[in-house]
Length: 140
Image (tube, rainbow, N blue to C red; front, side, top):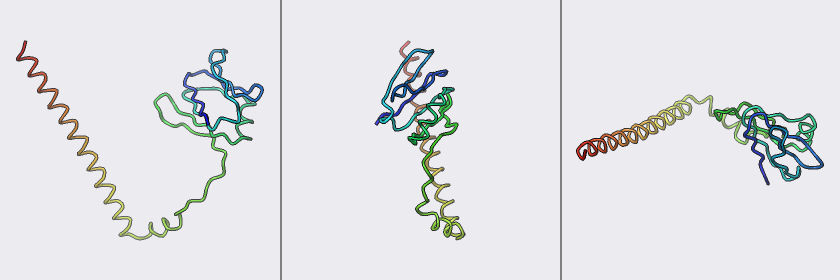
């Protein structure tokens, strides 16, 4: 089932005879049967016609808005929220101080590990770069 990605700012999505159609500068770019669309992802500022919004709401098609830097600005997920599977267990565990301390310690160790891996790869890259520069200077 297709996901519609709209990446050009100023594009618009409209409904025409059972098709979702994507327009850019009033020119048709894409047409997809409505019953095949599973989600819509909009990058930058894009327009949804009122007719499209109503159709998306009735078909419960999720729409995600993402800015040009890749940050999610918001979404239109019209499905009812699902109950959390482990919510009661998490609430009970959140009252246990030892559990909270153990989780915090695990997160801290994981962050330290990730920072060390990043530091080692940066150091290795820097050392290799320095070595290649020295080699290049010797040969010139």
